[in-house]
Each structure stands twice: as C-alpha cells, then as structure tokens.
Image 1 (cartoon, rainbow, N blue to C red):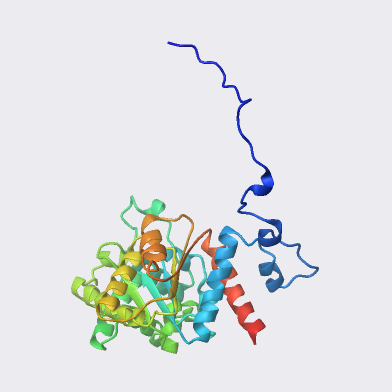
Image 2: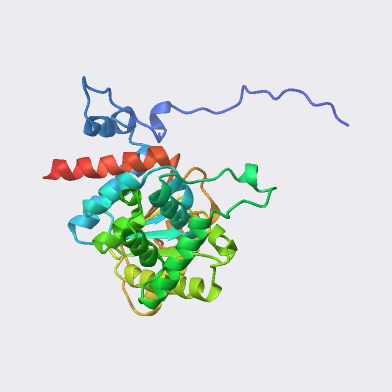
Length: 318
C-alpha cells in the first residue's frame, strides 16, 4: 500500500470575502441591546431576526393578521401542555378572542378534568405501575366515562361533554379547566382518542361504543372547523402523532368537499421536532400556498412568549 502524506495546500484557490453571500448580517439579523426598564414589546423586538426567534415573531404576526380578518386560530394540544399548567394563559387567549377552537388528544382532556376536580394531576407512573394501581383513580375514570354517556344522550361531542360536566358539577377548580372555559363561551373543543391509550379506558365505566361515537362526533366537528381555515392559523403544540394525523385527514375531507383552503399558516411547537408534525402540519398542508413554522423548545416557555407577543401586538395596534 502506498504511504499517505499530508496534502499540499499551496495550490488551493481562495476568493475575496466581499464577494461571498452571507446568511447572517449585522444590519439585518443581529439582536439589539435592550433599553432601560424594557417592556415585553422592547424585549420581543430586540430578538435576533433569525431561526426560532423570527419564526416565533412570524407566528404571532400571522395570528394577529388572521384575527383581524376574522379567520380562525386553532390550538391543538397534547397532554404535556396541560400538565405544564398553561391553562390560565390559554384561557386568556380564548377570552381575548384569539383562540377560536381547541383540539386535544385524550390525555390532555384527562389532565384538564383532574385539574378541575382536585387542582392537581400527573400521577407518578413508575411508583404505582408494578402494584397494578396506575390509572385507576376512581373519580377520574367514573366521572369522565359518565360525562361521555350523558353527553351522548344530549347530542354533544367528547370535548363539549367533559367541559359541560365540569361546569354543571361545579368542580372546585373549574376556573383552571380549558374544556370548561370552551363550554362556557361556546368555543368548539374537540377530543380525539385511540381506544386503549388513555387511563379512563381501563375502568369498569368505560364503554367503547360511547367513546368511539363521541370522538367521531368531534372529528366531524373538527372537519367543520377546518373548512374555514383559509387565511387562519393551525397550531400543533406537543402532539407528535395523533393530532397531526387527525389534522391531515380533516384537511383532506375539507378539500374533498370543495372548500378552498389556501393561504393559511401552521406551526409545530415541541421540545423535539418529530416526523409527523413536520410532514402533516408544517410542510404538506402548506405546500400549495401558505406558511409552516417549526419552533423547538419547552412549552412552559414558548407558549407564554407567544401569548405575550400576540397580546402586546394587539395593544400596540390599538
């Protein structure tokens, strides 16, 4: 084998840096110093015009533009978002007429129900799994399954049935429930479940026919919401599989029925960017015209930042 020797670099070609195109420029992209006693608006405007910062700014701007035009802003939530205690901020966005519809997976609805009932949620799975106790809190399973059965009789969907039950039974912490807030204000709230994924499916009160019918009603309601998404915004926050799949199917039905859904924005907020949200939320739905954003980070930080940017932007415009 021929012996290798270090390469001779004397013949390498170079070029003047002035001729190079640069992605980052001081005048366009750099952060600015904060003023004394900065407001939130000062802070937000001082962020670098790059990557996650500019995506967050653009999402906030798209949401404000959508609401000025009377277009929907739909917030799709995984369970961790509720466990992070973000309901007060999300409720504020509902009350300020920013969020016009709420979408949840099953775990998000369970955490929301438990918070409304006892002001706490999120059991220690590892501590109780081996004893056979995981997921068997009586009040959670019996309460939610009974709420679904009652809601079925009243021609409600899954989300409305749980929200209405919380309000009607005057849960002690109902003011911290997102589903209760939606029920009280008449905001569409849908819950989408897969049988066997949620602890309330383990209980004696569980009825697969009821659960299936109630979540299917919500799917049909969600399609109605999606038919009006043109010019609006869809936010997927913390759901890696279920809600991105549900959104894609709802969007497909809406387009199959002839609804024009161009020029809307989507954003995926998560701690890690996963395949399905990237494809089914950010890229595929907006490929024909629209904007898709990926924002990586902790929900307990990014969602309050987004809410503050929206509310600050609205106040400034007024």
